[in-house]
Structures are given as C-alpha cells and as structure tokens.
Image (cartoon, rainbow, N blue to C red; front, side, top):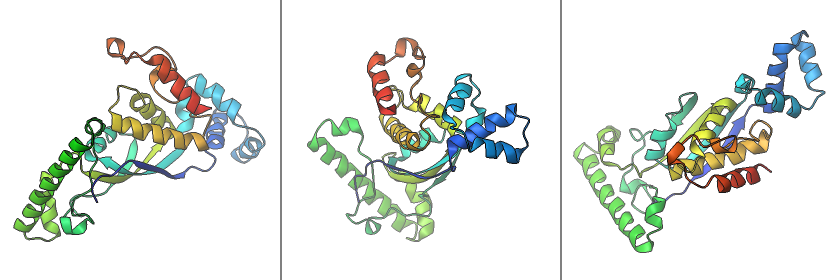
Amino acid sequence: MGQKTLKVTLLQHTAEPERLAALAGKRCYSGLDNENLVRDGREKDPAKFISKVVGMGHVTIIEHASFTFAVEGVSRSLLAQITRHRLASFSVQSQRYVGETASGNSDGVFDYIVPSSIARLGPDRVAEFARQMAQIQEWYDGWVQDFGGGRDAFEDARFVLPNAAETKFLLTMNARELLHLFTLRCCVRAQWEIQALADGMLSLVREVAPTIFAKAGPACLRGPCPEGDLNCGKMKEVREKYRHSAE
C-alpha cells in the first residue's frame, strides 16, 4: 500500500455540545430543579452565556462535551506524541495482532508516512525513502518467517518496523482537553505531522461547537507567545490564519 496521508474524521460528539455546556454552567447558579432548568435552557441561545463564562476562566462546564475522532494516515511517531495527552481515550490498531507482511499489502510494502522534509527534497529522495521502506519490509518478512509465520510472529517482528509505519486509531477527548491540545499542537513549533492533525481536528469541532472553539488555537492567539526566545517570529501570520479559519 505504501505512502499514506492524513485523514481525520469526527465520528461522533455529544448532542448539542454547547447547549449542554450552558446547562452545566447554569446548574451552578440557578435554584431551579433540573427539569425546569433544562426546559428553560432550551428556550435560549447558549452562545452568549458560554462566551461569558468561559471567558471568565470557568472552563469546567465544557468538559461535559466530548468528541470522538477516527484518525489514519499518521505515523507511529505521531502516536507517541498525541498519547501524551492523558485526559483522552485511545483505541489503536495493534502491530501485534495486525501483521505487516508483504503478502498482506497490495503493493508488497507496509503503509508508511513520508516526512515533509523528505518530500521537499524532490521525487528522487522520496523514491530513495521508498526503497528503504521496501528493505525494512524484507527484514520484517524474514523475521516473521523465522518466528514461525503465524500471528505470534508479529509480536517480535514488529520491532524492526520504523516510526514511519502508518497507524490508525480512535480518539475521544472532552472540549476542555481539546482546547489544551490545540494550544500546544497548533503552534508553529509543534512537529509538522501533529500540527496538521490538530488543525484538522479544530476545523471539524468548530463546525459543531463554534462558540466553544472560537478562540481555539496556539497560545499566541490569546496573548504573548509563551516560547520566549524560541518563538517562531510569525505571530502576526499565525493569528491571521486561525482567526480567519474561525470566521
């Protein structure tokens, strides 16, 4: 199957996430019983209330809204990064139970991601990278054969596979953790692959919860860059990019 590219889909999300967040906020300040509170909330637009409360820093109310994504066409390197976000649930395609033998792939090579830095060097270098992946495929298949060829063989043969190997996973996060992820991973200084994933996820959640994610993105959208002397020097361009995407 060879080269793969990023694909991210919003599979499912809390129904009416902004209305639920507003209801959670009003629960804190209202004397109404729950039935009447819900009825009262359905008659009002939640956007203004959410903007006010979240703007004051009371972001716990948006934790009630969750979002589930299907991600594929990303590397195992990206997986190591995104799983550092601990307030999330991950279900990842297993290299132990899903083999990467040549016979199981249409073009005889496991799926992999070509780093953007290699792609920029031109087709000759991409072809060289592809040959390296094909060599790794031979090594992998050799170990699978040496280990007996069954499913148990995948367990240790996978050790020869590179960080470039493609993976697929489902990911669920609540809205507050997503804001944190976007702050860190939409930053220009984030690694290119996870930045592209974060941008794709942000675009999807803005369609269903535009108020919650109106100011989502790197930290420089909401104040000075926290990177200090390591800043990208492109704050104006970054702000324009994310503010334009929010419109």
